[in-house]
Image (cartoon, rainbow, N blue to C red; front, side, top):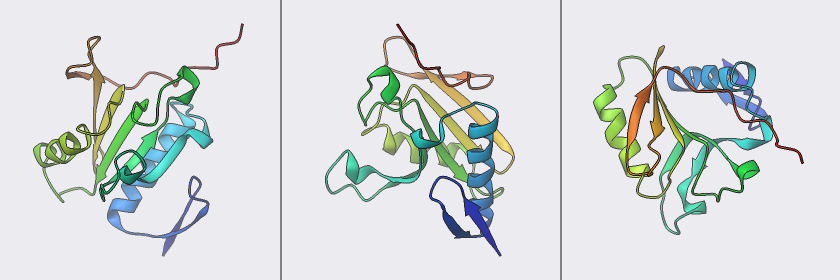
Length: 140
């Protein structure tokens, strides 16, 4: 069985983790209204830090606000249900935070989702109930 990934525009093997990833992609597109072209699936951190072999499950860029590649709007890490604990997922994300400084973080563990927002000073992340809608283009 396969899923068609609308971001990568190809069929992807249907694994339990891929199911979670595709559910998040659909939610980002249909509920949060993230523009399709600003979502990257399996984003390689080597694009930001030479030699870094880590990959983020989903990254939503914030280019509309003039943010750099390392300052995305959202970083998402997904795992299938019962694969690991939220604490394990946080350890993995903390590795990514050495390279990226997203405005928001989403942790997806099966059907359980947690959201975090960056503090005003950019030094830490605090839990929030849900993500806001993706910001619309500001026109003059």
